[in-house]
Length: 499
Ligand code: MN
Image (cartoon, rainbow, N blue to C red; front, side):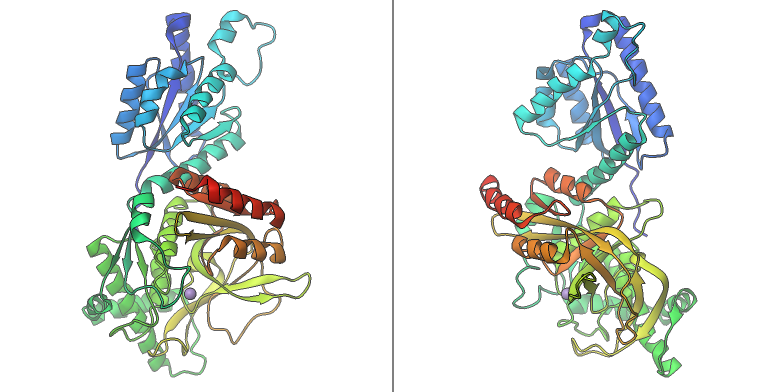
């Protein structure tokens, strides 16, 4: 498994010395209590760290620069307990480079009607201070997340938790390195793009390697290691030989085991967390990596087929963002294949030739060995299953030449009406919001790809916030989408994002 970094978030409280030391010590006490309760809530995926109360320009600037430098800090949560004059924040905010959440809360939930006096109001005036703080962000044109409500409210804590995952996706983006084992598929437009711009914008390193270099790493894997992994496969998955000779079947499976070990060693040795392959450029590999890639995705690697490095990088980021989600339902590379257009039963059958991540599987996962019409190698072994039901998101990052656009479609996964016994690949079936007709029309008008990075465990808002933090365009396709409004949004964005 790819290791999870133990990120932390700093909790910075804004105030001022206008109301005396007693007020400031109350502010400190309140913010410590909030931090303690947030950490105890069990709602947050990462720890919150209390920082001394910020009242001066110098301390604010110093704190934000320390946050920049601290590798474990993935973002800052700010809370304006009292009135904190926002000119004091300008220099610090100008120099700050990580995600920021403005928690617009106050210590008390209810107005203490019987006892409230002017001292209480001066001390507890988030409604006032939070507006001053918000103003300077808007004036400076900076991105931030604003969450409003009492800090003890589970819904508020849930929003902080979601944002933390987005923030980690932002921080981790600049650590994503994609290994291209082959170039983009010939003549395909949407999966290609500007790798230099991607590195400037997202921090991604996207490097090519000759396929036979990684094939050699596969050949170097010892038979003992291969056999041990094949044993693990046979213990873990249902084996569906479907009339093939069991020994011959096992030899085909062993090829994928050897690829899995060889690829993983090569990726680890060279420091990559995402990989692309191409069925048309397999060098001395005996099979198109199928089961092997499915297992690598399950371990947290990003993947894109046919050289699709943008989807590979997005999948890696979404794997990181969902790491440790309780009762996770899965995150996978996916491809739109074929429609069911029967009225009332509309949906898109999702799959790929082989490479769908088993984290999204519902029920048993089987191994099959079947011929593949694409490419010219022996029949590859692959994991076959159907995906879970429920809401999810499908995302596509495209390069429009002058900017990147992230398209985020909320979809509803269902079971197909009947099993598909002759289809030897893992599948999902979903209806996009707001309907197949409008959803697909909107997707096509946006220029979205046939490949997606798909997840049950992230919300459209989390991905939209990620795009915003990256300074790229985000388009949501959901139940509020109408074609008339979407066309205007696209038209206006062409101007808004003009360089
Ligand atoms: Mn494809």
